[in-house]
Amino acid sequence: MKKAILDRIEDGKAVFLLEPDNTEWLVEKTMLDDAIKEGDVVTISDTNEISKQPQETEDMKKRIAEKLEKLRGKN
Image (cartoon, rainbow, N blue to C red; front, side, top):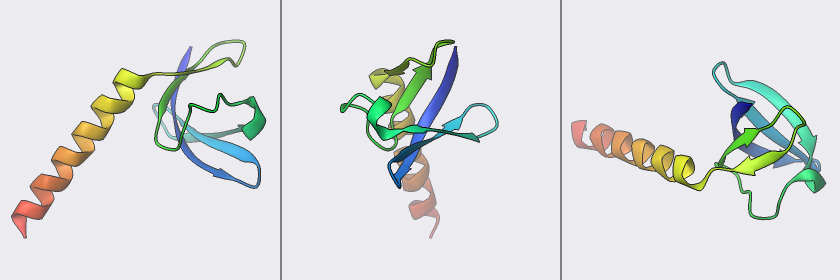
């Protein structure tokens, strides 16, 4: 099982960044559940089934927001 983040959707393709090295993995947008949006953390099974991970997505967004707040505070 792999973990990835949906980076963007372009030209009908979903572009995921695979952890840990941010390798790009492309799949047809039609393969995605409509609930999966850009910035979401997902797991990808050995059979390429893509499952949204809502808690991990929320945790990641909180960490990013905290880092931005710290950066803004330094200016």
